[in-house]
Image 1 (tube, helix red, strand yellow):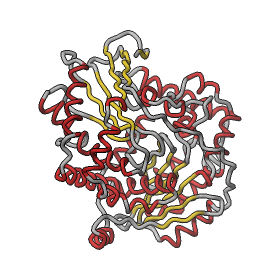
Image 2: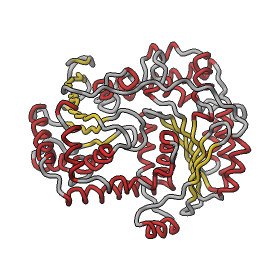
Image 3: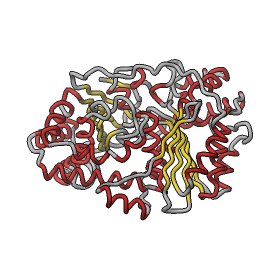
Image 4: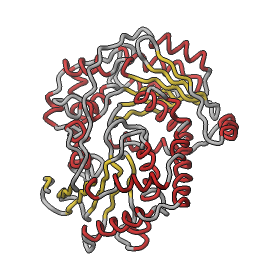
Length: 462
């Protein structure tokens, strides 16, 4: 799974530019403007169409409203396991034939499991749109669920856990570790990769029930971005998806978190690590609130780019590390999640430097910013955010665009939100920034996780 989402992020951030039509619309509106057509089929499938004539390619993306933190309690890792199962064959496509179909038609594809969704996408020549719509509909109708396929993928996922986490230095740090330490609600705090015993316990009935519930059209978004004619796309979508029956969906679990009142500190012993490391996470405001957008700008000021305050302090001034990594949502971006989240950053540092020295330097940055949010600082953050948004929207023939459109349709029932993002950030004032810093960048709202290297166990201590 780690390679999957890393590839997705790489693709989403690779810039390819806007079409001439987009640029003309940008000049008209004074900000970016993405064409959005949104409707629903009678079976509940949400459909988003966004035409882009930049290149003769098209993206088909299907997002299902099931992710790490809303999987069944007795089936940890099941959302991720099912991501693998979706490539094991359907009614008309045998095992791995979906992948072969895309590649033989000159396309690329991938899938990933995130906090709040599991997604699949294909980027193909524009004249292969109908083929991809047919193929996605084929596996939405039903999978080839066999014991052989299940057993095989259980082994694949368990091996992935061993290779990417258990047998890697800094394995799972901090993207997999921090949610388990920072959160208190099981849904947000369990091991997203899954306990090996839970993976072993999964049976065919579990798989069938999971598929019939969560992989239904009324729990999904179909997004098409690229060089296509909307009228023709609507006809194909109706032909291939309209007759797929909807499911009775269970009530969404309560994934809320209580307000944190005390700083949390933990140590993870890592026998494979050769340097200490630290991750510091601050709980985010509720999504789509004014403070949420303020934290997005604080992310730009504190973490993103060579001129970020933490980079200047920890790297340029003190030389504690060579790089500060971080942001909002390590499994994506600040827009494609739907629940509690942290603004987080992490570094590795030499053994000669103490954790206390690193934390002291961080506290100095936080104290400085709490007293010095200037209009110039805010404007610079807006410029960086605008640049990041353009990169997201223009990346890899529109893959970043497809991601945002799908997320906003899935979580907000409003993919047109994509065209209001810049305006929301522009509404943030220095006063709101100061209030957000006071309420969310306080010590009692953070969790500190350090990696202790060269020890013989991986147990958690506090």
